[in-house]
Image (cartoon, rainbow, N blue to C red):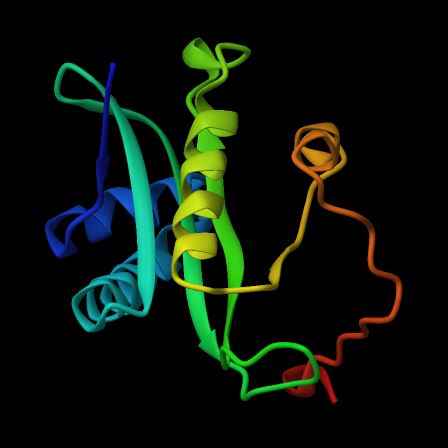
Length: 145
């Protein structure tokens, strides 16, 4: 198994795994464009696991310029996204390894806060890595107002 950072050339693979269902197909090209631009700008780090030529797992960090805050001189925060593993490769520790490597990189960059959204299935993984539920966040979808 080879683990490597994604490059802008991997943007379509990242988008496919973010939007795998046929109904989501229209979103793929838009997301691929976003991923390509953010990878090129150094504002997104994605790690991929490959078995031969096939991408079988991935995870990414979006770097956010949040501004300096109390006790955090680094203005960057990170948002963990696009954590997925092909069903044939699950339960082998790939997601854990990719996320752990991303967290180590974030720490090396001096990033003090990493956030994520989680499915119920993934929650035990994130909790085992030290993530805690954060009930103080809210969401408003302006497009639906």
